[in-house]
Length: 267
Figure 1 (cartoon, one colour):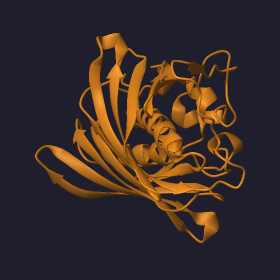
Figure 2 (cartoon, rainbow, N blue to C red):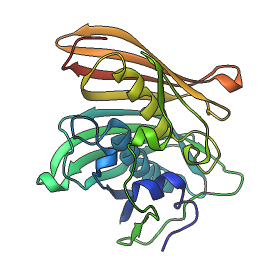
Figure 3 (cartoon, helix red, strand yellow):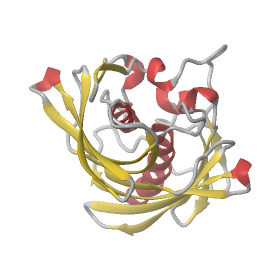
Figure 4 (cartoon, rainbow, N blue to C red):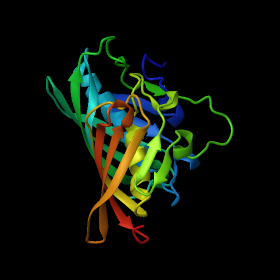
């Protein structure tokens, strides 16, 4: 049974499944489909971030009931490529305060013998939604499965959501319906998609981590990511990416730092 709020556009597109383990612990699964892979065949950073955000968001949200939470930052370290799937994310709440909730997650590739793919922490701000919590606490052991009505060949993730490289370091995305979350603003996962594409337009290679802070909603659009090379050391490059809303006085929506181990020269 799907509860209110779980069946949003992005959850349907990812075909996420979630199980309540009890004690504010949540397990989710996302597939490793061809349209979610990067050019190297591994699950994209944006897809991994969606897996994290969904799992920690439910755990943190349940800890805040009857209120709910919004994600304020995610720090994800990537240890190995997810190539087979599904990717299982195990999340739990570390600390639940009145105004802030901290949650932690580990990601495993079940198709590679439960290979540890990554580790993440995420902070959340507690709030009182006007229409109540978007997701009701579901019974321990019950699995919510979000199936997709999509048929046929799926375009690549960037094409699906209309992310386009304007020039090296600049990527834009129009605020169409499938880019918005249930509150009508840009999905957090798509902030990461923009940041990932903008970073890769400057330097190619294996991404081993992202820290992203969400500061304001992107609502009008087009959402625009601007990437700059921040530093290079010990064989890695750090790329700084701002995501802004030009239609709302160029408001800063998020700031990301992405770590890339180059396989090609900086462009």
